[in-house]
Length: 56
Image (cartoon, rainbow, N blue to C red; front, side):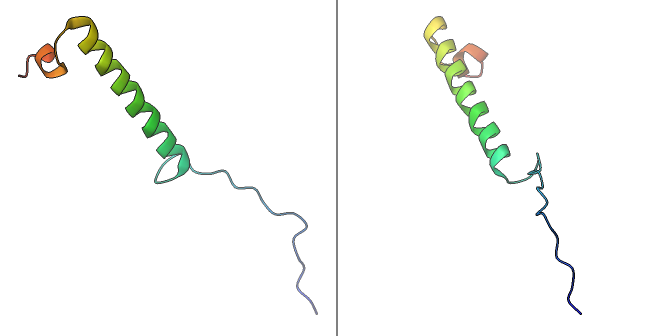
């Protein structure tokens, strides 16, 4: 007697947390956005980010 075989392979969605490509893309986009905002602050205020925040 043979075992029945599935007729279709289930398609599992990738989880939205943990170390996966979705989380890495999101982290990279947030880092790029933060970098651009930091450059804009330095350009428009004429000060570095730490000076602008009053930390240096």
